[in-house]
Image 1 (cartoon, one colour):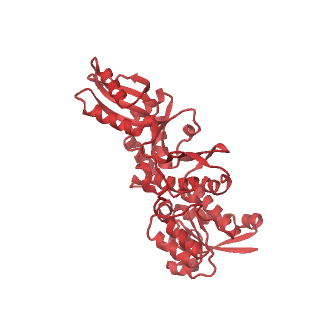
Image 2: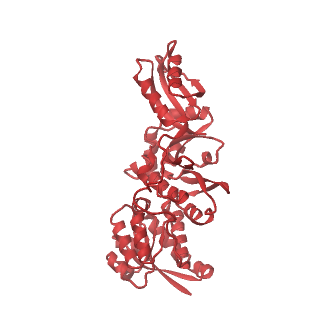
Image 3: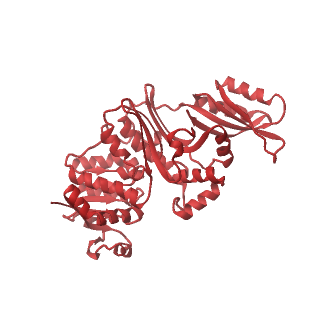
Amino acid sequence: MKKVGVAILGLGVVGGGTYKILKEHRELYQKSHKIDIVVEAVLERNRDKAVALGIEAEKIAANIQEICSNPDVDIVVEVMGGVEPAKTFVLDCLRAGKSVVTSNKELFCKYNHELEVAAKKNHCGLFYEASCVGGVPVIRALLDNLQGNKILSMMGIINGTTNYILTKMASEGAAYEDVLKEAQKLGYAEANPSSDVEGYDATYKLSILSSLAFHTKIPYTKIYREGITGISVKDIEYGKKFGYVLKLLAIGKNGDNGIEVRVHPSFIKNSHPLASVNDSYNAVYITGDCVEDVMLYGRGAGALPTGSAIVGDIIYCATHTNYQYSTFKNTEDAAPTTKFIENFESAYYIRLNATDRPGVLAKITSIFAKCRISVAQMSQEREPENEDTVPLIFITHITHENNVNKAVKLINEGEDVAKVAAVIRVVS
């Protein structure tokens, strides 16, 4: 039976979950895959944490050099997070001939071109299923099962923290600030939640996934990003009246005119499969030219779901010798021939606080017409606490982003006619 030695860098939530799976399922993998996976070393500053998990003292490495020089270690699992020292450690391991499995989306998104060079040069595997969407096997699907397709588009809920917050706001009518505090207490959100709520986490993941799907490098800097910090319960409630659910969506499209990649809050019809993905669950909705629509759904984070993805990569690495690398030229920047669409098309939800007097609606619709915006639906609400202005809500037909930006500017520059309170894109 083939023996496979594993080292784990970091024993936090995911590292601890990975160790638990490997320990408890060791006999299962011996029977099912004919491999004996043994954790030969860990790198963890808190030795007490490692000992509490049942790891022998002699397997707790003092530094990364001990891992790299250990002849019993075949595969290194990096679950430290952040860029440094994770990047240095991963490169050291690859240069030492160790294959690497990582869950680190920021590191992989920003520096996978460097990591892949080291992996190729030293004939190592580089695996990253756990970097995106937790335990949902979307990367393996893109690498293997969906390769017969030209992927036309992907749309996903790929950040559990923001999905939990928006679900709570919608179901309980709670304010963003209150739900965020609750999410932090439950461990769904970090003390500094900006990576999640400002959309950076989803942007890193979309960069990885869209590069795979569209077979060209999509740097995260090319992705339009907008977080959820400006979302109000009021807009979520108004959206419900039109049959919409609000989600932070990561969207990638590969069309004849170029590639479109964006992360932002979006209203989506309550009949769409993604609309029912709630709490910390994640899902990716993929459209291929042959397979048509496929949705992958599951836990987007957590010790065991993410550990499941890591262990899956360990087993794949241990049972395959012909390692896969990028199907495109993997450089830091996008290829010069890759065209990105910035002035993308969408429908829009626009809420204005308008002065309650004759002629205001006509002025607003005149501005819309000037900016080539056609109105599909319109609603006038009443707010008893404010008698001077009324909320006007418009759902537009599909138009261009620049058209809406121009209309917002013109409306806000008008004299006491109306002010734009919210603009949210609508997925048609």
